[in-house]
Image 1 (cartoon, each protein chain N blue to C red):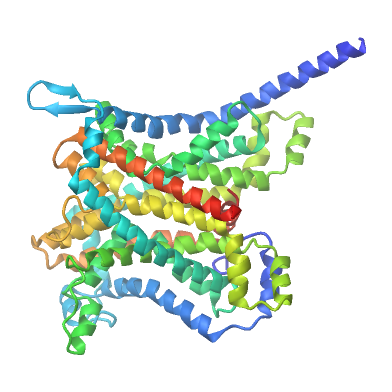
Image 2 (image 1 turned 90 degrees about the vertical axis):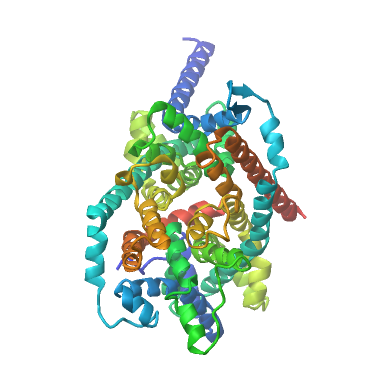
Length: 306
Length: 301
């Protein structure tokens, strides 16, 4: 065999090997991709398709193009729900993530007694279903046998009505904060533990205190993890459903059927029996969430480079 | 004990040694434990309340025990109310959450390993689409999925809850990061030289090395389905198929609406308490796995 023939044979073997390997990669990927297509992509496309029709009493379904989508943008009930969730996002998310960051930094600093036990205590609510958390807080907010109301009465005060229209949004923020501080804290804490010891020691030698180290070294180092928690919070907030849906059972006059955009889509589909318009609402809501997450990511990146 | 024995992350041993020499601070300890109290007190209230009779619920202080210790009566009433449907709900929850978490973990492990260890056409684009899909709100998909399933006669069956729950894009992301770190290329190369086929390398070397990451993905998928309320609520109409979340919500609205209600408060409270115990136990028990898995995933993007 000549040298060039050898080279060709070698090359051929390499490409056939590479082809075999990428075939394995596709074999490993295929199951996931199939369910990904069936359960994520197809429903998304179908929801876009559904939103382009309108059901009329006579004549069945007619094609209306983007009309449904356009009317969602001027739908008072949808916009009010989005507005409410925007307030929720602006107020609750900084509190939740701030608290999570504080606890993560405190635990990482090694200055807390019984740190492991307190870490678990903070994380435990994550294992509690949102339904149970809302049920429980619903009783704690209620007038009948809540220790909060009992404490107010014991000192001769009228307990605040935590389920009234003035306070219900704050009460809901409290439930979500209680549920998710621990989850976000664990993500941040896990990231903190991977900061190399050397950079922290260098700061110590420079005489930086705990707070200084946290602000100038630790927080910048875990920016990616904080970003991740922020994106999850955008997604979670704008599709809020469990808490308002269950609280509406004990405060039906305060929480209407369009209190959150997701509650609105649900009642359109299953109470009003209008799946086409409900699909349009769900579609616009999804697009909105993706846009906000994208903007958050872009701003995060810009801050990194600045 | 495995409960309290592990720190997450790889460099943790040396770091926690270095830290142990530091003094604890009173102020920081008090502040953190004040936060911990906020998270624990409602659960403590739930636990105490599940030992009370209905009349003690109303007549005694929330954080003190009642005149009677009624925990076992309450548990009995939870499991016998409506012909013992609660036990069915427990079984359904375990079935839905367990099955979908197992499938989700298997799919995410295979896909994550493929992304981490192979080069193939369209890899970057496919991964970008998968990662981007984390931002799609699942509830926006639930409605069209319901309509599709209803056309196929799948609604009101366990599949209606399981199938949508087996897709875990975040799981794929975690497993890719985890496979990159935990399965050395040399191991794969050596096995290739020994003549192992690609798939047997994956099963014989890849899977065991990725096990802690798989536990993390499994646990988070388990919690996601266990705690899911929206999907089973729209998919299931037969109460014998409900998971705990939908069933408890139904009991709560019965007791709120007042139909023979008074007697239900202690049943709902005790049922809620029972439903949270299994997950808390699983999380405490498997702590070291999910914490190290998260540590690998949270830092790299």
